[in-house]
Length: 165
Image 1 (cartoon, rainbow, N blue to C red):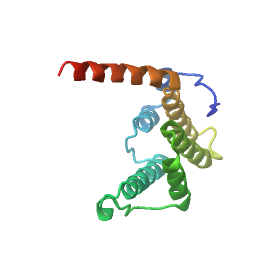
Image 2 (image 1 turned 30 degrees about the horizontal axis):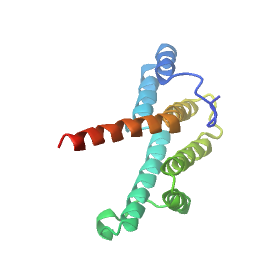
Image 3 (image 1 turned 120 degrees about the horizontal axis):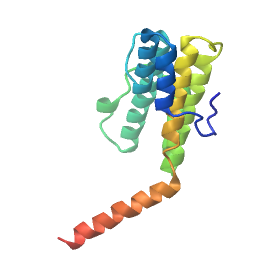
């Protein structure tokens, strides 16, 4: 069982290794496509990927609007959802970029929860698990301490570059 607020009980590599040894090739390919964000012709994955595309398009449109960029260039002409629009608006209004990103990750998690409802012992349940595992793995990369260390390193490099000019 995966929980959003807990560390991953398994690595993606270990999960894939278990999948490879216990499932057929077709289902294994679906799982790897899910983790890589590739299209696979599976309705569950296509629905999730359509949702992610909707979030990305909405982000693009709202960021462009916020930056006063040409509206038609960045207009979201695709599928829309008031839930996505509101979630993106709330994320972009957040002054803390990390909190904004985490709110969008929570949006994806909740969508997967809805999609996976009633799918426990089938390929859709396994695909939801794989996608959630990918989300947790990505979320666990976010660390304020690590971010501050990286910022310090980049800032120091920039100072050195400026001094050498």
